[in-house]
Length: 264
Image (cartoon, rainbow, N blue to C red; front, top):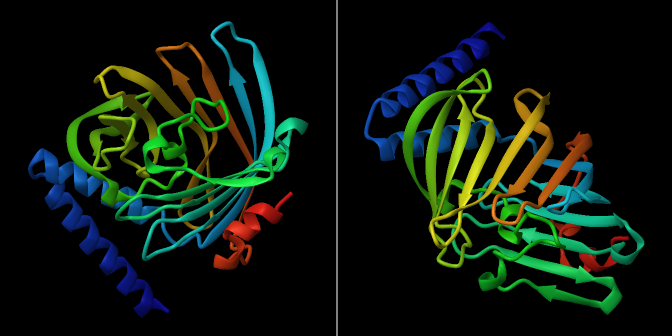
């Protein structure tokens, strides 16, 4: 037992020293190293289920609420898979989004519309569109794989009492609705705390803030609240997450077009 512990500690020290060496290098290498480390620390959760509430606010502050469920499957050799299903309100009950994220190439996404009795494939050129009227775009709902961006370290700073890295990431996909993103990642646990999204005109479009983090498993952190604010329209969408469950036994067969249509 002590021998295995020593090996783990030795490997962790090697990773730490290697990361530290890269972080002292050029801005591009440093930005990529930060992204890789953040991705490495969010591995090993296998699968998860979570319930959430979506709160949509217009520019006047009027609210509408929706209840939904999200199931996710970790795919180590590729991007993760996810299935989102709406339970309320009645007019969109059963609406679902199936996403296959990929490290390389376009993500695959299908939207189930029970009212129309059809499953619609989301074309890559339409992924920047809003998801069921929220401030989250379809591309925001894919897993943020490291390979989807180029990176640059911008600066270190203190954000809301936490020491953070601020990095820039630029989408490789020409169909992305964003030219670039600025991301705030805390140095202690490499959690994504904030993202500024810039549109195709290089103007600030949206800001995402993730708060109220909780630790699950050994080193899996998840926010209890994610807030997306649209600076150009004054609209916002909150996602309130609760009842996270991990290692529930999900597999590829739970993430198919047939499962998307069957889920109610």
